[in-house]
Length: 202
Image (cartoon, rainbow, N blue to C red; front, top):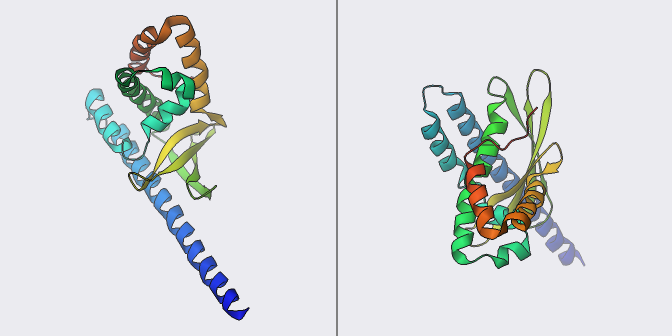
């Protein structure tokens, strides 16, 4: 009985340490990435096109655009796409979501981002809270992470602003567009959306 208790204690201690390390990894990843993006956004000497390219490069390691796109489109619509259509969709989708994230941060360039708690939901799912402050208000942002076994690292697959998940908003909009325009028309429309700001207006 004593041996069993010792084994359980060791497992508990190592388990807590492992989760603690994961929390630190997520916090460090988000903090480093967001801080770097904010620095670029504030730099008025960088042209807009170059600025966007730099930000995309920073966000790419942190965000699972394929997983995000899959969730935004829905299982049935995703499976109905050809390999070529999926590639086109992810390309435009990536541009659009990067614009969305940049727009959120761009509104608060003179203020600050507060990094909140990291919540472990399971061995493969983690959430992290952020508070983006302006002089007049605070926006609550939540990042959703999955563990990518192939890449052996955590990557964000969704973002929620003020409790509204981006994937759910996308799902409603994308499915409405596909129903009206069909797949090829939807991809052409998405290309245009990718070139414009997509964040909610205040």
